[in-house]
Length: 227
Image (tube, rainbow, N blue to C red; front, side, top):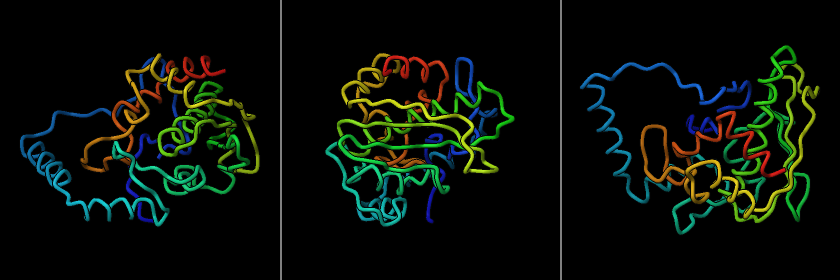
């Protein structure tokens, strides 16, 4: 499947998420050389200079044949939650996600971890899956309400549930209010990249701002408000 390692987190985040006490963990980096900085700038400029046809081909490749349209703000919109989950492929292993119903849509998600991990890490994974199940559909589909059940399964034996699902039913209005209260986002579109760059595709990839949803304290605050 033709995929970039794009999302957030990786919104590539499937198996073992690590919680942070007050900020997300960032890889240690050193200052780039002038040559590398120039190369990066040139690459970004090339990405930004994509023609409409090249951009469409890029999106078509990423979505792997799943139909989509672009909103007026340039965000990729899928017809339903099942299509969205298939296109992003973040919960790709068997049994990691199910769309159980409609009116409202009921999405069941399981992160993967090991039973020997700490309770804090397991709770973090559950919260990460729960917020993914809430904010991804409201950002990339047109639904107005969703029920999400999120738990954690054993990566060595995916038939074994090690954290029982937590279930929330949330309206789009409630989710946006909580997002605005605990992040700098004003709208769901703020969670989506609005420019192209290396491994970032506008309208499809998560924005830098979206990474705040991976902060432990932000997750807890939003979930507490939505309960």
